[in-house]
Image (cartoon, one colour):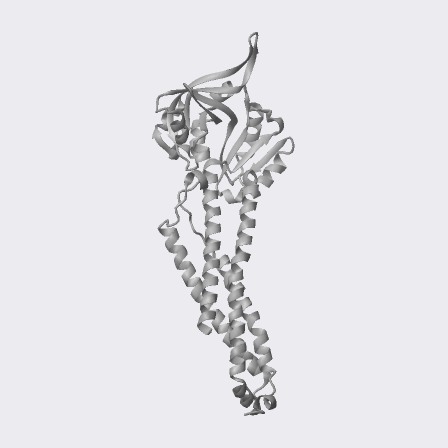
Length: 383
C-alpha cells in the first residue's frame, strides 16, 4: 500500500511539472517568435494622421530615454502582390533599411539574396513562403497593388508599383512569411498615397520585458491623440488565453496528486487498525495522544516527501532531455515553431512541491487524529 501511495504522488508531481514546463515553453517560444516580428513599442496616432514633422518632435523627446535602444518611422498597410496570374494578399512594411536592420534584425532572417540591395529604390524583401506562392526568384519583379488609388475620368484606379525582389526572409511563422513585404519608406508612402505621412514610430528596447514600464513614461509624454502600444498589448488576448489554459491544466493535473493522497489516508487508516494493540500498549505505559498523532502524521509526510522528491527529479530529467534534444516536434505552419521548448522555473517547482506536501499533510490529519483518540481499554478488551 505504501509503495502504491509513493508511486501515485511521484507520478502526479512529475506530470504536474512536465505540464507546467510544456505550457511555459509554448508561451516562451511564442513570445520569442512574436518579438522577432513585432516592435517592442509602437507610437500611433488616432485616424492614422501621423505627419513626418510630428515624428521629428517625437524623436527629439524619446532619444534620451535610457531604456530605448533605437527607433524609426514606419508604414504598415495591406495590399495585393501579383505576378502573372498569381495574386496574394500581403502586408506592406515601409521602413528605413539601415534603421530596420538594427531594430527588427531583418538582415539576420535573410535566407536568400542580399540585404544591401534593399537600400536601392523600388526594391523589396518578401517572405519565403510568399515567394513560393508567387513562384518567383531573386531579381524578379512583382506588382504591388494598393487599395489607396485615385479617381480618374474612367473611374477609380488603384496605385500599382512594380518592385524588384532582392531577398527572401524566413521568420519561422507561416502566416507572417506568406504575407510579408518590406519596402523603403519613400516607396511605401508613394504606393499608399501617404506623402509626408507615416503609420507610427516603432521602438526597440534594451529589455523587451520592460515594455510596459517604458510605455507608461511615453503615455505621460504623448497624451491623446497619440496611442502607445506594447508588444504585449498587441497580443493581449493570446497571452490571457494561454495564462488561463495554464491555470486550468495546473488544477486538472493537481487532481492526480489529490487522488494519490487518498491512498495515504487509506494506508494510515489501515495501519491504525492493524496497530490498535500496539497503540493501546504505548498509551498504557504513558504515551500521550500528541505522540501517537505525530507518529502517523510523520508516516504520511514521509511518503509525501519521498514521492514529491522523486517526482521532481523525474520531472526535471524529462524536461531537460525533451528540451535539449527537441523531442517534441511541431508543425511550424500551425504552431509557428518547429519544436516545443520546455521551460520550468524555481517558482513553479516551489509551488508544485508546496502543493503536494500540503495535500499529503491534510490527507494524513484525520487518520492520525482518530488513531490518537483510541481508548486503550476498548482496544485491549478482547486481547
